[in-house]
Amino acid sequence: MTNTKKINTLLAGAVAAMTIGMAGHAAAMGPDAEKEKCYGVAKAGKNDCGSADKAHGCAGLAKVDGSGVEWIALPKGLCEKLVNGSLEPVSAEAPAPAPAEAPAAAE
Image (cartoon, rainbow, N blue to C red; front, side, top):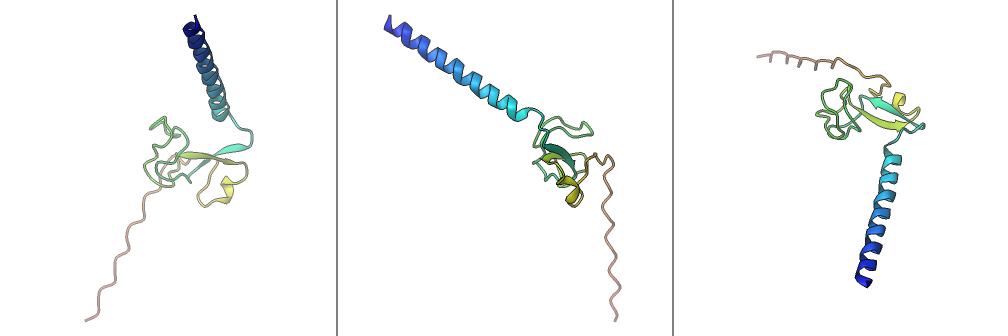
């Protein structure tokens, strides 16, 4: 009888631990009134969630630094203070500037 009691106690503890863990995870994933999505500042592989252009749906899949369709959650008011920070996605990526031609060497 003691073995059954031990097993039941262990199972109850495991269920309680899982429930507490899930509640904490749900709170972390829920909306935060003090944060906002900031596009254009995420480093490659450091985005918070899916891209605005629906190229992917997961965090950590940004391929380049500063993509206008990738975002990270930042405290309200901070995004617009950052270089390239935008509260709206920038759908068209600006093409990289063409390299300037070097002047011809004088002989």
